[in-house]
Image (cartoon, rainbow, N blue to C red; front, side, top):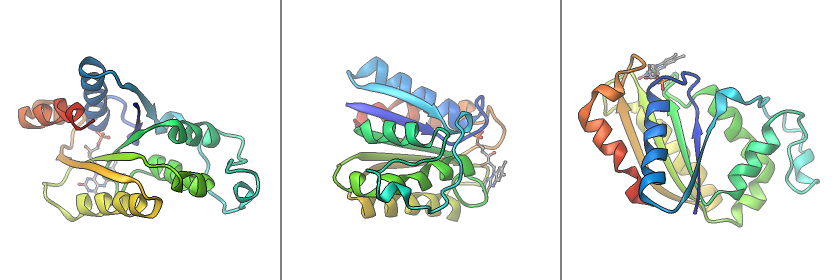
Length: 180
Ligand SMILES: Cc1cc2nc3c(=O)[nH]c(=O)nc-3n(C[C@H](O)[C@H](O)[C@H](O)COP(=O)(O)O)c2cc1C
């Protein structure tokens, strides 16, 4: 199985990055699956302009940036984990730019059956509306595309190294590989 992890945080030493690296490590150590992390903040992905060129060219975004390559990687993956910091009750703009480009392959994605996970990390205490909103958004995407929402995790952490200080969170994250 190919597992693609999409990191929506621009803080590459922050909480989301820590969680996603630990998940990738768990998968590599304990399973035969291939795992790759893509940092959305390192990509150049322009906002979708709804030009609809993708609707007549076989599902390819025509922007001369990283849109097409990241969507092709998602297309090739069996499972995708979305990791995001909570930004204003939602996912980060970097991750949203990639998500919007799903539009280029909506038809092709609907023919697939991917497994999806989501991890949202915010400064607010858990539970909270922001975690619900993010999970619901990704669940709606899954329902629309006919993909399987495998898991959703949320953690509360504010400073970049807060998450790694929580023994309970670290334990939960270290066991995510078991879901695959
Ligand atoms: C632009 C911005 C908006 C934020 N909005 C929220 C929010 O609505 N709710 C929340 O709980 N935390 C919010 N936060 C805090 C971050 O989610 C929190 O610091 C998180 O740990 C960042 O994750 P990271 O270290 O992976 O980047 C916001 C932070 C920034 C920079």
